[in-house]
Image 1 (tube, one colour):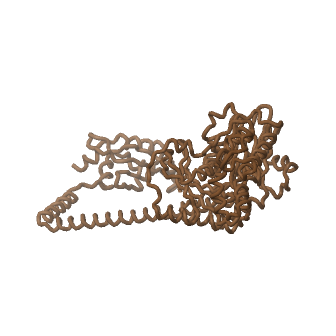
Image 2: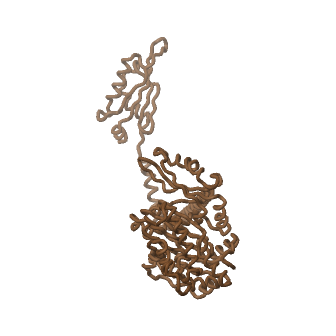
Image 3: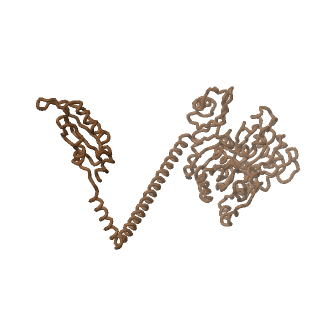
Length: 580
């Protein structure tokens, strides 16, 4: 799998949504996408984890999603967020890691030993150090880990849903958020996430169990409809008045006691409570605008109703709209067989036509498109969080699982390197064997050619002539022997009663070694001088480098005798003269 690709999984109340993303410096591309609804009988029916696993595994299999690396969302309602300020400026990262559990233990609604937490948004200044901590119960995290393991998904990160929504907004609009305070409401089927972004930073988030299923439930109860029929009735009939004061006399569900009106009013109250929790007063003062996304944000007139009810600018926001605005169609839509199968199984094929890194497909539903903010944000944070959304770069995947996966990756890497090394060695051995065989063949060919040359008559005649020439040269070569040297120097030596040679040897290089006995030191010196000055036929020196060893004194026939070894070498010119 390419290093810049990731699969994002959002397990919702009514469906699972999966995106396969590619994130690069130029932008984000959705390479594959899919949404599959759970088989549901009523809006209040609790969906078991077994159904979630079965639905998600079918979607992954049918749409052929990559199973690693994978990021998954955990609902904001399942996590607790705390800010830690005024930490010591001298604290190192290691010190902070030790401080975090101590600092947050007293503020968590569960025991710290039962928690999985992640510190993020570390800010250092000369005056203080601050950071934020997100924590969840280990049992809540384990649920998502178990679902992933059951399907065979290799989790890289678990990220709170509100962080994911913020991640998309920040990545797309960070330059426009510098001096504004923006609220984003992601209204899903069973839950709504509120994010408040101030000067580009996520400063507040809240989740509450309120969504489109409550409106479906009202249609089920008041009209006696099944869940599928109530869903269709909601889409066709749920219409809100332009403002709360214009409810009377309006058609199409605009009456004050209509299901849509009651549902919208309860939603407005919940959003207002979130604003109050952030601002500290009864108004939305300080919040510039509210963006609505999520599949349930498409109730007709909801944006204008909430704008009048909350006295704030409200807009519908499609997380994919900015990308869709730069469409360049580069591939065909799925064939009719897949479309029919997806419809039969309750899957609304989602995708997107995007110029960004070259994806092109189509979304079959506006509600699906608006419901992809979490999955899209998961991919951005999971793949490029440190570069694109650094202030929410949190991960609630337990440390032991991450370490286990890292060990597995290292083991795989070592195995791959080992296999490659073996292959390289095998290839080298094969190449060396081939080279040796080629050399041997070359030598055999040369030997065969030489053998053929040797068999020729002219070659045999040339060899015989050369051998005769060498033999004659050897026979005619002069050799200098020790006797010849002795003969040449005999007439030059002092009186033999004074000096006598006891030994004489000469090696092949012309080095002469002689043993001498003399009657006195002076006789030894005289002989050395004579050897140094002796010339052959009074032309050239006979010896070079005349040297003597230690002189020893012995007694022979009651007379003192001086013994010494003299070494010298024959002069090259003298040797040539002797040869002549």
